[in-house]
Length: 81
Image 1 (cartoon, helix red, strand yellow):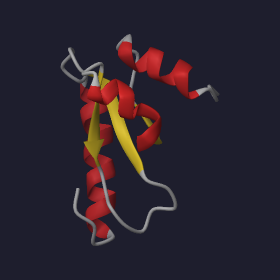
Image 2 (image 1 turned 30 degrees about the horizontal axis):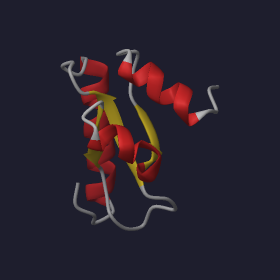
Image 3 (image 1 turned 180 degrees about the horizontal axis):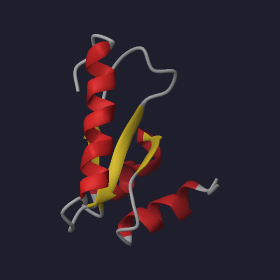
């Protein structure tokens, strides 16, 4: 388990996966264009989250599937995604 958000962001930027982290934790990197945030839902989550992935890379099939699962989960709960 990796429990340090900066380490998680570095791994994502290196193209080693995607992660759910607090939106505010990646705000700077998203604003700088280093990461992108994928909106997965507004309400009903215990914490505001987003999926981040390397901005300059096409997401691998596993990451795209993960984003799809997150969106479907949010849709089932009546949230936009």
